[in-house]
Length: 238
Image (tube, rainbow, N blue to C red; front, side):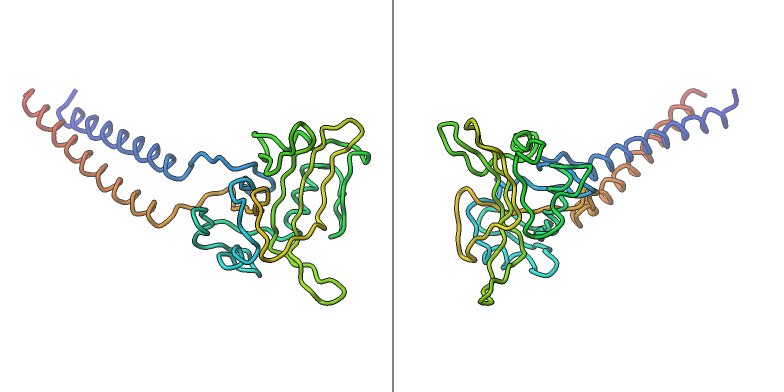
């Protein structure tokens, strides 16, 4: 084996190590675990229970009413990077969750009851949507959240729409879900949150990009030092 071959092998091993570390680091930065509810049609839905206690007007101050894009925080609750769902977004969500093979919520005033078939109690669970409301002892639980959509009544008054999922434990009482449920603009409750989602395909924040660049720079320095060390070892072996 010639000296040139030995040097080439050392350089190749150093490059391969650098690439492996870089790939692992990039994946760790781009793919982060989430404690959100679930992913439906490319949308990662946030737990409604994480945003209880805020009013529609407060959310409208952090999120755009037309696009739903949010920025900033309300108290200790971070809204940055999320999208405030419209009632149509939630209609599609309910379609996928309750009757995946059919369209049971074709209009705004659509509602669903257990006697139509199916069951939604499995949706109110730690692995799906954590309940925002629990009536004890063992009567009912539900997920209530504000959408960004408004409903105009006959007098022209705008009412925020608050879609919900509801599960009754009492015998003879069925589960239900509805899009046409109202809340006041200034109303708050510790059992009412906000329907929010973001893309399931994460895009790194600017700080993450900076960290990636700094990490690659550090890797290049390490690779250069390893290559020099390999060459020195070969030279010493001579």
